[in-house]
Image (cartoon, rainbow, N blue to C red; front, side, top):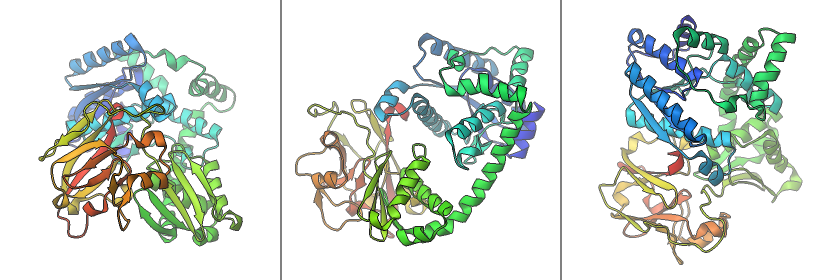
Length: 477
């Protein structure tokens, strides 16, 4: 309890009045976290809620975990928010590893629950041993400074990890002393997984034969690297702004001369920053990908291009390095003739609903409005979001598939063009084109969903009210 109090204070994790959602799987770490926060809640003046997601991977065992969390929440008198998600479908549909698919689904569930329940913080049960394991994983992968930053105690000022300085043995002792019922996941002992081999073999070997405080030292290294990385990233801001020539939703241009003159370490950071801005993440981008992009700086590489994960194409065009995200859609079908999914076309009347779902395609749209002066930083906006000048839209809206001869004026382009040309120019696979959804008003296509909106309905300096439409996958909502 004392260690957790110190961690909360040192990292300023909690403020009086916070509404904290606790992610609870039913395992030892999250159950201890829930009980500790429950005991601290009155003195900290915080309100707790519990979130549990069934990943639909372990059958009856997963159902038993959910029941355990439900009972614990009820006994402690905290609301329990439960969800189910078919991680295997997300894994297959988005071509992800099981771990990455589960992570995406889990955080999407947490985000939705926080939004719906009015929570401003998310507490997770990562502890010091988890951080040590993460550091060794990063070292074995040959990660750079960001990868060696470990698990942050606080992320984005909303995700907190109160147990980050607590050893696993302390958690086990607390469970035994307090007689807390916990679930066990057999996969945590499966040595086919690298993390488990690190946990059960490598770390004990290092502690027994090399350094009994290896867990603490790896955690300290993570703290040092995290601080150094934050400082270095801040130093990158000005060079990045100078090197960026142009940016819109799916396209970014860097100055080749600026990259040439930069120190190799800075050049790598500039490319990584551009890819992160374009894609919203660097999870599938490796050091080898960054080096492949930098090879395009050679004089002999003019006109050449490289293709990166996530549908990113990087092309050298004279003194410009063009980075473009060509396809962001999940591939609903890969072969065979296209059929019209059930529920399309769909008419959407004003006032617009909060959410619509297309179960046959596995996605949905979320609608909201905001003032023009409340818009987010455009650098943070992804291709799954569109912002329209509400006064330029003529209701009703309709969601349908593309049709032969469809035309629109892509944002930033003068003059209309056929969707067919847009698909060809952006290398959209033929099998994806016929089932690409479009959002129309009564006069025209206003959004090729997830790819490009129409220029005629864009937000301008004269805009007062904005319609925000967000595309999401139902499995990861």
